[in-house]
Length: 434
Image (cartoon, rainbow, N blue to C red; front, side):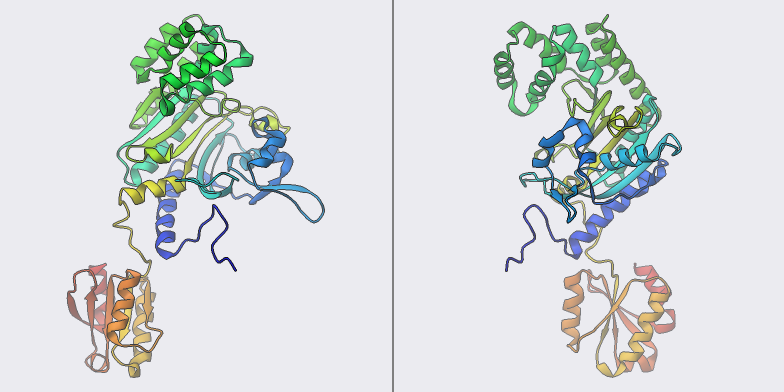
């Protein structure tokens, strides 16, 4: 019997689970702070719902966990959290707009497992559906940025672009609508594979060297409002491009009002261009480049229409929890999180005072402390080793003499320091330690 979890999935032992709960708790608190409310949707959806996003159709079956139930109904595990919210809003057209929701949960994709990429993984999404105001785009970015700061990141970068700017760029270069998506995807490889590879690939697609240089000139522009001024001059007279620049200007203005940090306009950013309709964004962390982007999203105004509803302007961002955890592990950012939710362990010198020890445990638990007690007959040394192995910081040592004198010893496992405390004062004194 193979006792390992299926390929691309993992078991999470207490230390790992505690760290995940910490990250999810920080993110959820920030989402709520920005006025987003939670929803929950099923782990699996009807196949036709999953196939609707981006017009993927039958090809999506190779990328997801697709199956049929006992009544031959086609189903699939959700591959992101955006499709479910789109279905929910399409099924509930009278829901108050804008609809601001967050959802945190597992998703599944039949990918080849690699660094930071698994077949079962967690995402944390915020979306605003029912607003075409660039303020909505700026707000989800501000919330995402605050979540990263609250987790302890200082060296993250939020890259933003706009699908309309890329449309305008293609128009200026004289590239037809039929061919430009493939060209943009080639340009998107610039950072990873270098200029030579991209030029060669575009040449194979029939793009002249002069046109390639023209494209690379603007694609290579990165920065703030100064970059937008240059882009506006480059795309002057091209309506769709000018509209994209205008939207980016508004987003930057709102982000400044939000006091958002580390924002970079990057015209090389291209993601999901058959799906996104306006602003697009990704988040990267310095020192975690091998994991790729740790969050991404953008404006998608046609998703609800794909489910048979009316077009509904929408925007959102998804945080990749697995990649965030990988980067935090690499940067050793969990030192203050701890390895156990249990902060106190009651160790028994002898078994005769077990019921007295239980009373101490119950008193501490009633005061709100996470407390455990020895459940096996073993020596005090082994009990201390057990508490230390679990990462429990404080051990209360109780013996027959302690009960008679109504005092116990509190041992700090990190420093080795021991303090004698009256039992009746224990809850108050232990608060000074924790």
